[in-house]
View 1 (cartoon, rainbow, N blue to C red):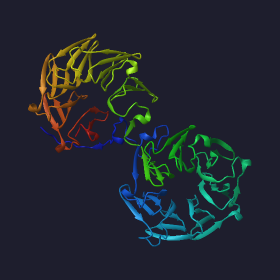
View 2: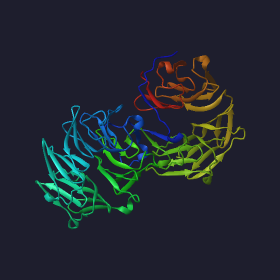
View 3: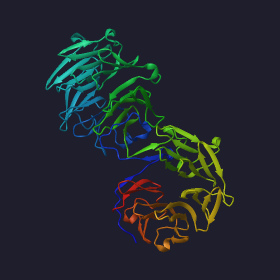
Length: 579
């Protein structure tokens, strides 16, 4: 019998570079959840926009978000507006009032306007109209709206302040150390700070003040600035990175930075993480004295980064020369693979131990143990573990681990020592399932004919069972459910065997997963076919026609909210049992 099934959520995991990665399923990330610097950046979801997905071209100089939620990207061939799905391009061909399509910098105004700095001047976009506010003699380098609503504009030949229709210019004659402005920020006390080619300047009480080595600030060119949470400043120069507030508070030497890299942008987010952009070395996060880099080696599209920007949902956007723009955000899953210390990305089985640590059976790199602090220890041939893939894991009462191997060996890891047991009647097929059925007895599932085997005190005892065993499960009443290839699903109780096959209404005789829920309902994943529900001997099936995401169900697990999570060849998805 087939029942309607509501498919509530689908999460598809696509393996990078054609490899699988270990998935650690967690709670859905809240809407406002900034990136945590203590987490590897490879564990975040990354999406990209390029000229293939709508950008006018792939060199993005600047990013901002207007109050209506649109993200804007300034490129060397025009503006791009992104609504989360589609990109709309604004260039000088279509919009004559946008006199130059080479966009150096952009900034959003609190009134919903977009300020655009080009090679030739400053333009405002508001209510669908472009208007030139300033025709500059040099490219616009920076735009910033201060708390009083003034628009401050930096260029290579001076500083401008726009209040309404009034434009005022400032140069060295007004107290600036130099006319070339690289950065503008404001601290919470209202002070405006300017990075120039000859050091740092501030604006407070309608006057400028320059800073020199007496205050601990170099008069070398300042590449960029960022305001910190405590009203201090992050200052990037050729000498390195400095956190400063009237005096140096923290120094990050250039020697600890990537070699031959120049800092192009700084951003301190709401989690007090400092994000650093480099011109040839990607990005890095800096927190608690630790610098963590993210480059093309880890998957960034380009190492030439012009800006990092945090949007209203605290996603991080990375603007790049030649690489478009990339978004990093928390996903519903955190992956743990080679980038996080795992021996390899191809994983067959996972076991969470009672102490919270995780045991991982890999394809060819042995047994990996991930401690609670993320450190990985690998057990392999050197430790006495046979070669081959690991398909089954079980934790014993004493915390030792039973291991099922590709060629049929049963291994026991206790206190770092591996003991290997070999069934003399085994045909050398995969040991896929290990189940504890009493204090001193294990039930083993070999992927071979008559592959259901009891193991007790070093001895193997075979049972007659149709099919090649894939998985086993122990019911609350002590009975055993077995999923097989060719033989369907078997229920063993009080010495008798009841079979559930296509003749009994099952979708397939290839049962890859068996899960028994809290209500003693048996859920069987078949391939092909879908999901089968067995209750009181009655079979109910769910497949594509009832809303199931895929014909294959490879594994089933239940969360605390009444959802069944399942794997298939196209990813991971969940359904509600109430549907």
